Every structure is written in structure tokens, then in C-alpha cells.
Length: 226
Image 1 (cartoon, rainbow, N blue to C red):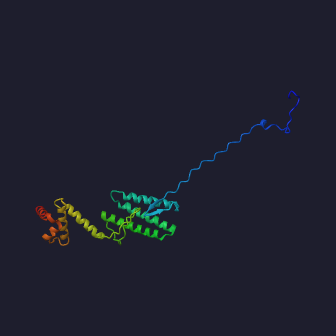
Image 2: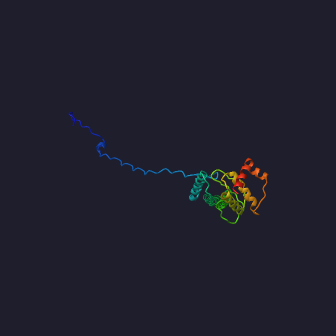
Image 3: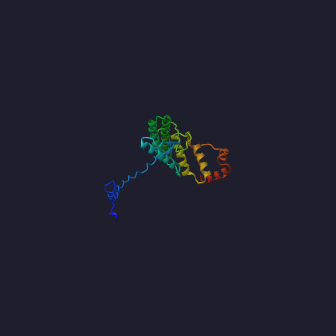
């Protein structure tokens, strides 16, 4: 109480807020971190962009992988026709399904082209290794990868003719008396002239036409080698 006997009285007799126990709000729980959604992968095949929202997802991934595989095949130092035929077969199946999903007739046409390309590529491989199978109609070996449309290939030989040509070349390689290209050319032309009857006629004009300035030298080598 003050010394003058006056007591200060407040109209609010409730305890002062300062006297009340302080309450600290609870910390807000942190929201779990969410990973940002990654954009779906896209790619290209046969000059076409694979839509990132294409469904089913397995088709989209197959088309992207095929485009990459065709581009990788283009970088190979040597052709591998069985592998190329397999890629064309996969492309035919994938494009046929793509056409079913989208109703795009151009995709179905591309699928048929891929089927023919696979057949032709396998026939080319069979020709190389000498397999005899029935000859099918000429087809487009489009060689299509991710960006290049291949030319139409017209066959010059039937499958049987190709086997005969290979047999002649193997005979020349085994029987030419000298390894020079000019000698092998002369032996090849002589073999072809005599292939049916066992004998054939040659003229000086034939030899100079094949060998030009080397005709006399090559003829002397062949005569010396009997």
C-alpha cells in the first residue's frame, strides 16, 4: 500500500494475462516431401515422333527402343542381316498395334512395309549363305531406320541364279593360276563362255574389251599355266 494510504483498485479483478501460464503452439508437422513427376520419355522412329502419352505404355516404350535400335544399327561397321530382319519384324508388330490404337491407316501401311522388308532381308541373308528356299515376289527392302527411307531394290538374279553365280566365283577363286584381278577376270569370262558346252569361242576383241592393255600379258600367263 502506498505511503499516503491510497490503494489502486482495477475494475478487472481477473488474474493478469502475464500471470497466466504461457502456452506454446505445437509445431506443425512437416508435409512429406513429394518427388516431382518426371515427364514421360519420348522418341522417334521412321520420321515419326512417339507421343509421350501413347497408351499402352509398353507400346510406347517398344517404339522408342526400336527407334534407338535402328539408329544403332546404322552405325554398325558391317551389316548383320538377321538382326536387321528381326528389327523389321518388331517394327511391323509395333506399328500394327499403333494403328489399332490410333486408327491411323498410314501406320498400318508402314507395318506392311516392315513385314516385306523383314522377308526381303531374310532372303538376302539366305542368298549370302547359300540357302535354297522358294523364291518369293520382289519386295521393298526399305532399310528404314529412324530417318532414312531406303530405295526400292530390284533383284537382278533369282535365288537359283544367285547360287550358280556363287559357284562360278568360287571356282574362279580356286582355279585362277594367279591372284591378280586381271587374271581372275579372264578366268571368270572363260568359265562363263564354256559353262554350258564345256568349250567356248573367244576373240581378241573379247580379251581387249575385258582387259584393255593387259590382254596380251594375261593371255601369256594363262598359256604358261596351261
